[in-house]
Length: 272
Image: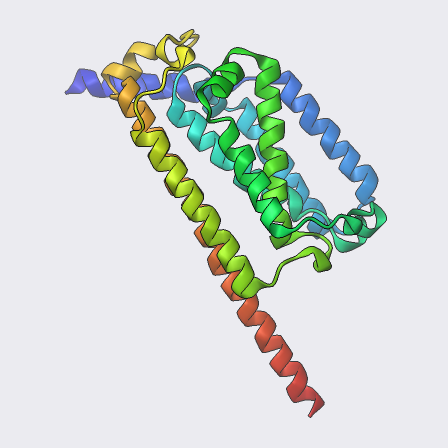
């Protein structure tokens, strides 16, 4: 028992020390941040902090051991990373655009029906789970970069009907936004179940990892990350992670709707 615990702790320590300078990712995040600063001109610090948190989170993820595990070892890490990159990062970036900034950039003129935004978002999320596309992303830095960009763009499209900087581009909170989020929850639940329990898919990078950290045997022996367990864990964690984000947004939507209703009632009472 002691030797197993020591092996697990050693593997965890190796993973924890696997932070790296992902130069292309840092350069891309830095360029996006500088462009935003030029466009925003620091007119609103609250929006600035929203955008900064999203950009910093993306840079943190792409330099973290999670990204290395996703690239070379575990489908589970890929599934967890995808929840962050598709849902969390675009959400924070979208909240960083004010209505004034949207008008200045003429983003308020872009009208995309929420059904199209939902469809494009879910397609972008699901597309890179196709075995041929995921294998390409794992094998090529260029394909990996295309995957990250596609997921962020798809996530921004998905969140746009809910948090568009131009208020006219948002859908009603009740019931439209709730149906929108519930439909996404159902889709991600089905996708997670398919990923977890579909017949085993073959990903060469995960079957025979490069093992740059020397932990491949320990992940199987001490952590029970066999090919089948890795697939099932990844699918279920994607399902749970996506559902957590989406259902949390449902609760926030209810809260914003309630607060907006109380504000209107207070305004009418003040008039009378």
